[in-house]
Image 1 (tube, rainbow, N blue to C red):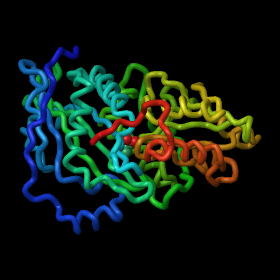
Image 2 (cartoon, rainbow, N blue to C red):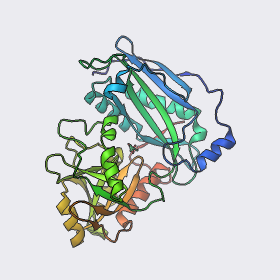
Image 3 (cartoon, helix red, strand yellow):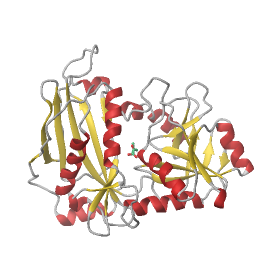
Image 4 (cartoon, rainbow, N blue to C red):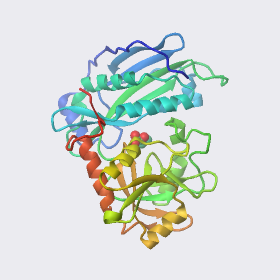
Length: 371
Ligand code: COI
């Protein structure tokens, strides 16, 4: 759907009359886990055919009332984003590349026949939420405020001959520690043969809820095989590595001054991760050539056996950079390097998080001052 010219969208402020008291907030923020504790407010914005985006509000966090026949509940017309806000040493709060997330939301919207949201409205909604829930941005090491913007189809009716004629955009936020329990530890991954995540022409490159719903069976299979995460292969040959559940993958070839990183190319079936894109820029500036390519399961296994592939890591907003230590599959199991976090993985991780927390200069202009 085309984006239309819209006047600047303002958010009416309706503050919660029962924000969590300071002492309780401090307590829940001490060990929040991932995505289970939420701040006092949420930002919302509605869309109709006649009015475009309207009724911007900051309101108390709480249940959304929906007609049981709302199309999102039946046909899954939903898209979302994930980004983080970081408390900086200079006392500011900054988000990482929010305009990149805004642009991706609109690419997802196009695939899912939903209305585009002006990028500035996306960023303003987040900034408004952060201005009021700033106390929820963790200052403890390695913690951040995970921001989850999403759009759902709200039209009442069960017809499937056209997309919804009304939508609700909402931003919620959650203080988080690591996505995986146990700090930065190598994860074990399962190569799924039974299931595929995406096929050409499908919704693989859109960040829509359905992609994640369809992935749970593969993730359960991974857990049954004592793995942390499922790795998705291409749908036609089950041969080419695509991505992990909710994260992109990088392969490190060589070591020391010879090390280079390769990530599966965006063929239309992979999610174009913002962290992935950032590492493709950051790597070369650190003297680590980075490229997009094709990596087969055989090349992964043989490369680890010969020592050509020295490290593998996953990356994403939630996962940051997470080392992959071992692979399990119907075809066999193998260890990557010596199974411990490798130096290239940890170097890239440190450089990236230092920019995110404002501990290093940001030559890319990635950080956005939120409040
Ligand atoms: C993110 O990293 O923001 C993701 O989308 C992963 C997630 C579904 C938890």
